[in-house]
Length: 483
Image (cartoon, rainbow, N blue to C red; front, side, top):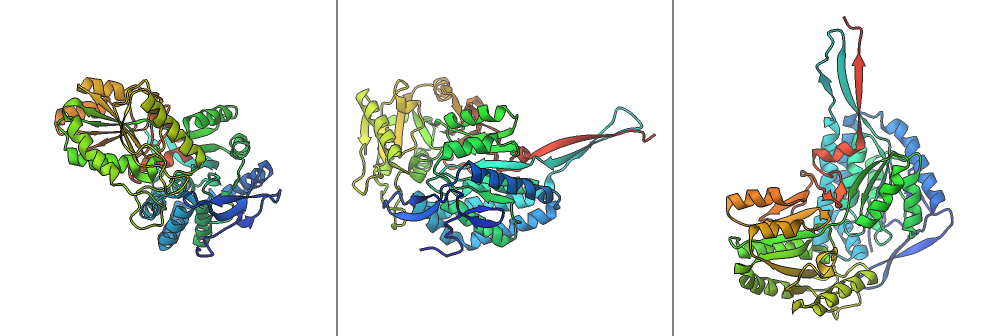
């Protein structure tokens, strides 16, 4: 089905394609068709030790390469990803389910991080600090932290890898990567292209496993791992933070969200509808920055709902490789059951079903694009990350009320609002307790801007110039006796 160089069925350790020491494997299933698309090693803690040892050994030489050498290799990796753009997109759709046009966009988005951090590799500057003593000089230099454990979710199986691995390699770190068990094939394909680009053995290592907890726990407590970068749920992130505390490892956490999307009465309603559709229904609502709660000011709620209902109802459900599809499958049966639970509870507590509200007839893991009105904060759907194609509409009266209700959550990743008054724009943007604010825009992710959250939505930033900081130590050097 795919080019042989991208269709790998073994893990990647120390520059070699290897099986699990146990010999065990597990299947990778297309969520749209329930067909097997691959089979990969089911690795355990002994395989983690092997991968970390390879990364630790490779670090001793990789850290001493020049920034220009690392930049050149990363640039070549970027070029190969783009050269295999269509095949990677097809592979992603097969194992993850998102529509092919979205998969194409993600491959380009993921490649952009490799390109960006190839350039940033040469800009990890130190500085000279004015000394308080005439016979001394103060300098700082930046050095790589060491071996990085990167744990990746299933919803963006290319971009979440490159957003972590590219800055780590650019800084001079080596990586042990654990992709999600639902979507390991894209990770192996990227490793194949990295090897073709000339990235040395042991610099990137891929562990595939169906036992995410045991393998993840061992990886994040391994004494030779210096840094953990995790994207996933807040609950798992808290668990990893506790494990990392014992050995005081550096951590980056991109965790869950509960994004508000606010439509004020001076908003361009057509633009707000377009932005809400783009934010909410991308990847069938399975993103951490999806609009989770749509707040609409009372004076425009009827007009907004009419336009938004028509836009939601027009979304087409089906397999991602089918032409014209907007909404692919949810990732697994648990995801569908969770969406059903949230919708049914909201309806039982008084929410109004505007459109959708049930499984699609296409197949078991498809759910209809759904719109609920008259939702309130007493419903679980207002407080949990939905991770499905469900829009919830709340009504508010004042600007102060909108900010207060939007902030009334332990999460603080992404937020959005639509307005025209410039004073309101500044007040609301500064008042929202979120790491990312989209103003009159529903799509906010790119490689040049810092991505990350406040409160229980994470620690640190990915992308932009800040994205490489998490993989560098600052060393202060005092040179005395110069008088």
